[in-house]
Length: 543
Ligand code: BG6
Image (cartoon, rainbow, N blue to C red; front, side):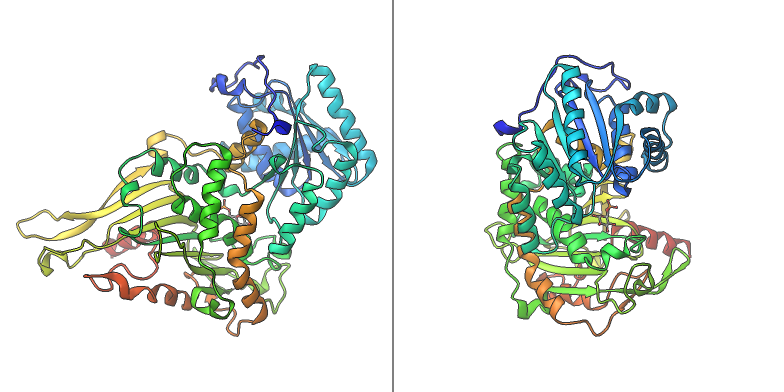
């Protein structure tokens, strides 16, 4: 752990409201959480529900203070009221419990003013000093930038004047995505942050890394012996990563129309999922060890020549259509979106990781808005058996083995394999074994922001993006971004809302069909997410 970002500890322990693991909690020293953008959407929807649930489960430190900073004129009580409303609406546990909220609310203070105003920063420094004086010990100071990217420079300049930077040994800064708009702007952002913070103090959020099921990929791979020996190009035919959303751009048209699916989802969430699947086993769970292994994957991704982008990437934009029985508008008709926008709301890619383990194994990535269902799923398609000894009549329904890691919803893991159908004749059919997170643990997973907030307070950067990872991820996509920025699509919108994206995306996978082996085309193409398959099967059975 870096000396300048040492975690403070205290032996004192606050009574534990939910009987959680007090021994872990007691490691959390006195902490001041400063939220810039306290009146904003992220604080309302994500950060406060996460804080509430951490509090409910007894994870917050005994000596704790939240200082919300924003320029919206209101008092602390009004802010608390708004934040409570956020808990009521968005907490995974439903409405706030009166008693639990009343115990948390006094820890929330408000500092109203312009985020760059030196007087605000002086006041902030004073309040933090007051907390430390009251607790009679230095505090961990977490500076959370829950603000749009344009506000970051102003805040960092203000912090710099107030010495809440690397001069404050126990401070760390949390930066939300989007982290840059491309490689150059991400580099510029890092350079600006590094003028006042050490890399070890910078926590770059990718909320997918806080998802329980994403963390479980490492547990599944490295805490079990059975898959790792076949986790390579000899046994795995391809990997398909799907992050599909039903929602359109909602109220975020202004931001999204300048970003698009590649920047908004692929550069961060999907590439991180790819890293977890492709990375080498870690020697330990030290933050830098995990991040080094992930960076290795990103560096090994084969360069896509700008002139060949069309062979590796497909973009799409939704037109009007139907979703869950409701008519929904085209992307270009969404608020905040230009009526002639060429921004992609769908992106699919075929990538290769050039190393011994993965040479020539395609990794297919796809994500889109207004797709038929919300599902994030990783499908690992195994190669067929080397010799098919069963008669053709037995294997008419043959499908390659498939491992499905379901990130959300219905979190879990499924394994598909062949079994003999009951009866006197020899016929095989795919069956599946399933681990359901909710059925097994009798609870839904915690929200990603709970894990991430707690990790920042613990000074554990494992689940956060290091600068070199961000750079490497932007570098992978740079040729695609350049090609797409240069040539405008002629067919947008090219998929109706409520469908699985543009037809051209199928060609990315068809390209790979030749290498399938003895069973010809079986298993080729994009794999339908398992839930959809099951729904389709049920509908088929009912009709
Ligand atoms: C965000 C994107 O990072 O992730 C959004 O900006 C997207 O556009 C969201 O909707 C998806 O996150 P989740 O957790 O709902 O899958």
